[in-house]
Length: 301
Image (spheres, rainbow, N blue to C red):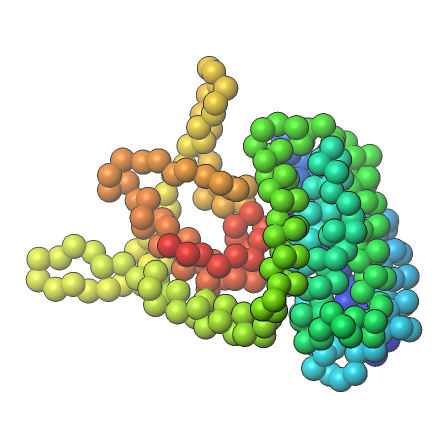
């Protein structure tokens, strides 16, 4: 058990802390973006600062965890790598960047613990058997604090930069989700995590059939072609609300990596719907690559 926790889980937690910080930095100013392009690499500094915290926590979990069988061990690992844990880490960063929101860490802790119990198929009544959840959460919380401090010390992130309207709303929305998630997880009808994951997998497998093909206009026959054979990448121009600021061309990878809530405008026949089909197909078939804003997301057209 100790070997299992010491390597996979520690690496997963380190990856989540670093990857989500990277995602948050995309919403900061140019200097943060340049750091992500490799001009000011943060990863070695994060590894040095965060790894000792996670190693200590993982060792504590290995001593106290009562994860009885291989199936539960796999569920624990799956939980730590899940989009839900990434969302919790984003909430931790948001609470640090927007302290005036008065979000108590115990609310995020409750969300984390309840989710973990659901993944391990245990009820709230048996939570005493999984006291190591506090160790895991404390390590996540402390690691996020340290990672954020590293970014600030490196000059990549200044907390007050989060005050711009768009970034403020993005971070505030992360915090607003906490209570809704807790209410959902602790409601009278407790969610079946396994059933949700099975539905998600089946739905994702069906998306390419619906959105992965193009039928070009033809007088004789309607032939379908795979979208990757015909699709020509769309060009994007960012619209600015600042007067006299020149619009900037945006490549599709950059567009997908930074969008949060976006309105895509274009002339009729300009490719908006086809781009949406392409995006849906890519998000489903390349799910693990986190193409959209660094998140694993399922598209709904």
